Amino acid sequence: MWPLDNNIILCYIIVMKTFLHDPVTIETISAVNQEDGTRAYQTPEGRLYPSVTTVLAEHTKKGIQEWRTRVGEVEANKVSRQAATWGTRFHTITEKYLQNNLTGGDLSLWDYEMFKVANPVLDRIDNIRAQEVALWSHHLRLAGRVDCVAEFDGKLSVIDFKTARREKDVEHIQHYFMQAAAYAIMFEERTKIPVNRLTIMIAVSDGFMQVFESKRDHHVEQLLYYRDLYEVMK
Image 1 (cartoon, helix red, strand yellow):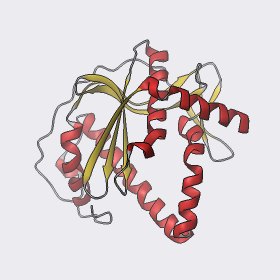
Image 2 (cartoon, rainbow, N blue to C red):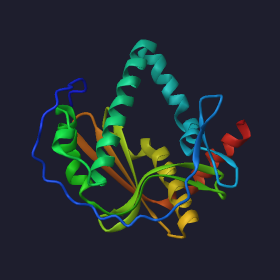
Image 3 (cartoon, rainbow, N blue to C red):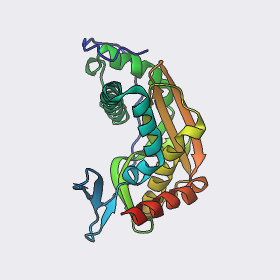
C-alpha cells in the first residue's frame, strides 16, 4: 500500500511524455454552493443546474450509510478524510502531468510511488481537447466539471480519474459511467463534437491502476432515471 502519511520531498528522474493539446473553446460558468451543502452551476443564461455528482449521490447514499454504520463514525470519518486527501493529490499530479507541467521535484515519496504506477496508463492519453473544464447541458438540466476529454488509445473519450482503497468490479462503478456519460453529452452540446467512449481510471491503494471502458449510450437511460428522481425529491 502507498505510504499515505509520508511527506518527505525527494527529487526523481522520471521520463515524461509531452502531451499534445488542441483545446476547444467553452464559455466559463460559475459554481454555486447551495444552502444544503450541494453544488450547482449558473449558466450564462442565468439557469441554475445541479452538479451531476450531486444528482448521482442518491445512487450510492444507501451503501455509504450502511458502511458508516458498520465501521462506526470515528473510523468512517478517518477513512473519508484520508480518501479525500489522497484523491486530491492524485488529481493534482495527474492534472500537472497532462499539462506538461510536472517535475520530479514536485513529488513526495508517496506521490512518486503512485505516479510510477499511473504513468504507463496516463501515457496512453493524447490530443487533449479539454481538461478540468466546467460543462453544462440544457437537455440534461445538469452541469459539472470534467476531468479530461482526450484520445485514449487513439479514441476520443471522456476520461475520469478516481481513487479507491480496494479493487473495483465493474458492477460497482456504474455511477462513474453515468457521470462520464453526462459529461459526454454536455461536451457535445457545447462543442458539437460527439464523444462516444467513456474511460474510468482508478488508482487503487494496493499500488496498481484499473481501467474500465464503456460507451456513452449504455448509461444514458440510468442517468436520466437518477436525474428525474433528484428533481422529484427536490
